[in-house]
Figure 1 (cartoon, rainbow, N blue to C red):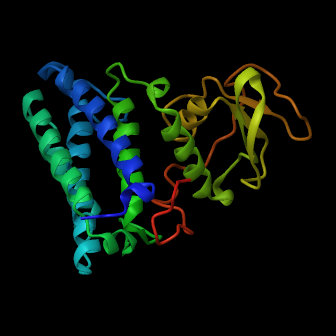
Figure 2 (cartoon, rainbow, N blue to C red):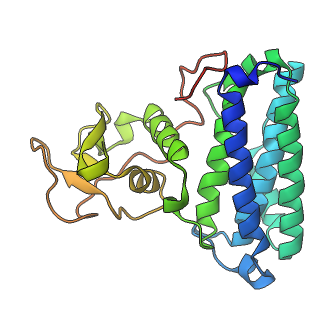
Length: 272
């Protein structure tokens, strides 16, 4: 069990995860059997597919925590095909079964995070693809799954409900994992109060700049919106032209990587 979490980002991330999970569980508890069988925002998936995925994702993080704790390589999922088959098999369950599974898997994962030995947080693990990353980053990855898939349920929770820390962290990591060769976007500009540009990410591709408020940018970059709230800044110009969503370039496929490649092994004081 960690003894120094109050000195690092671990306590903050675990508290954020507990809150996000509780919000997701509240949404799941409000769904009827008919609601669960209805389409989600993910093509080809019902809400039941999304709920089954989030529950099994918790178990997959337990596998990686086992790897971190024991040093024995334990894959997140046996294979991509096995992952997909299990989601499909579980997707058609009644709403009450989905809720019970979500509650149980989330509880077991929270306990595993809470009791992880201090040195295991710095152990190297790897998802279904590179790069390897330290185990503390699993908290960030699980928060990503819960936050984005909550939106995918299309059940009253949207990008505007994301917390500011979640949005800013995910924007940071989205751009940190960017693949310029696959991008038609040259810059991403973050707008703050009064429409001021508060942060700019450059060198992302050969295209124009795009700008928007944080949640709008994250929703678009992660495929959770069609570009509402996003404006294009043509090459060689300093201000946006045209209406929101007009002539948007195509960002790289998301997610490009499961984690940035240069994460510190030791849990930092704050992240990002």
